[in-house]
Length: 322
Image 1 (spheres, rainbow, N blue to C red):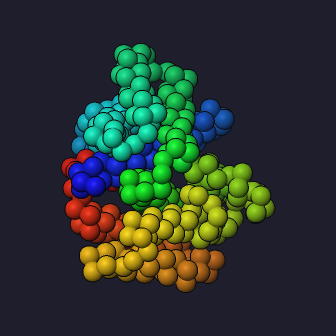
Image 2: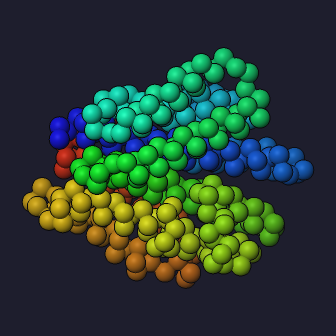
């Protein structure tokens, strides 16, 4: 398969996953605002939302201060924000168009129609309700795309490139989310129990993991329990360990289980990260240690992406930065 096709499959998957993740983050924040009567809670955390969505630097390059409506526009439809939902959709469509011979026709139709529908809605006034509806549409589009991929694609090379893109993107986002929340709880060490509960509940809601977490843990939102679940759980599809295991599995599938001279570095990096997660004892680590671990893991995600791209001659586009 041509490297430019592989590149487009990989980035199509990353941009679809990124759109879903950022839509979940913003949707969760808007719901929290509706459900609380505390005005401070309603207007706080927007800088953290920008940080988790990887949009903070672009925001402050354009705006002098935080404003809720401006932040929402910046994350959703701002063409100036590389990681805006609009740009994610545009990039996903461009990549899907370039790979039409290698993806199910239903997947191309889904992404293309979604892009056209959202373009037609651009001039509609954005109320909290319409914004929430748009976010739900993006989440549903992503989940439908994944359903099409899982139910109709043969498990060949195109499928494996899509899987690597999806799992790298998801792993990095979970680590970024946890890092931001760890930093916030560390800075605000005099938080009340209810405030800490709110932060870790939010983390679980963003990754759609609350129901799965509650089935295994008491609903007290102990930070170490939440962190252990979202870092080490081998069965939850948005935990860091689960994502890394599936990146490695997808690369194994690409190489038919063999390690060649050109793929040796990639396998070594992935095996090293897997080993590091396995020996990490979340329950006995302080918040600063955990933040260092998560920082290091985010760096490793960028390293995996770079080495993967070099191994298969992919081109990391300007808009790939996270």
